[in-house]
Length: 296
Ligand SMILES: Nc1ncnc2c1ncn2[C@@H]1O[C@H](COP(=O)(O)OP(=O)(O)OP(=O)(O)O)[C@@H](O)[C@H]1O
Image (cartoon, rainbow, N blue to C red; front, side, top):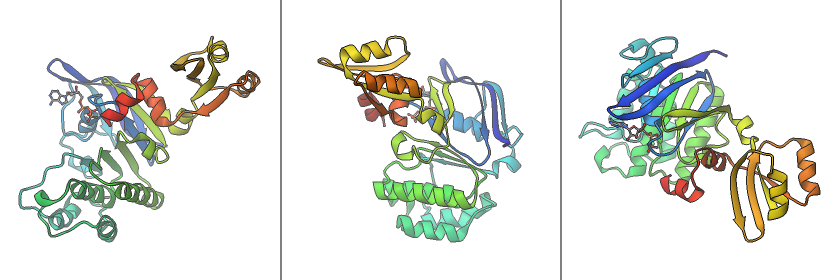
């Protein structure tokens, strides 16, 4: 595997705010990455830096081995789809789709046509008259049909309904199977994309706090449920990610359990349940589920 993105000690300050704080990581080619984190964690800033749309305060970025800033040969290999994309006032979707091949050398017009049907995008309506979901679908179509070797989706589907989001996930997976490329997806709908992700980066207050293969991460925590006394005894010497107590019952999330520990839990009358990627990330970024869902 070779690295598509290499980031070393990257920092971005906006006056007194440190949006990205001494971050180092690599992104391997032909994998789907999730870039996850709470509001204001630094996801968009990081993507802007990686796509050469902003300057770093400190540190080094290599995209396909080169600095991306004002680097046309590198940037034509990159597609950055963001929720807040602006278009000229009189633009219609057909104008966006017509101009896309100028920017993306791997553009597939037939695939774009199929996606337009899938998303029922009206091509001849002014963009400023489109619904929020229709507006998002333009970005999703461009992001998919551009087939850029490195594609960033930053919360691409604000306003897209559940059917349209599922179409996005399905088409992304199908097309990725036939045309492997590197995708970095930022979203708050973690459970929805959980099966799509092969690697997870979690950013919190500008720092990368998780950089892990998604399967390893999924198996890295377990919730132990039972009577308070039995659960407390079982978790006594373990690192606890979260505790919930209701009356005499307890539900406690701990790290990975081996086979012997699972048997020990069963003998103690405890139930074990897997922790979803979303719950795990909530635990790691240390907020309540409710707060997280409200921020999504
Ligand atoms: N141009 C700017 N000037 C000042 N502060 C900024 C600027 N852009 C971002 N920030 C701050 O940097 C931090 C990171 O913002 P960023 O948009 O990268 O977060 P995010 O993870 O994408 O959040 P969200 O999930 O809400 O979109 C925030 O505290 C934000 O207020």
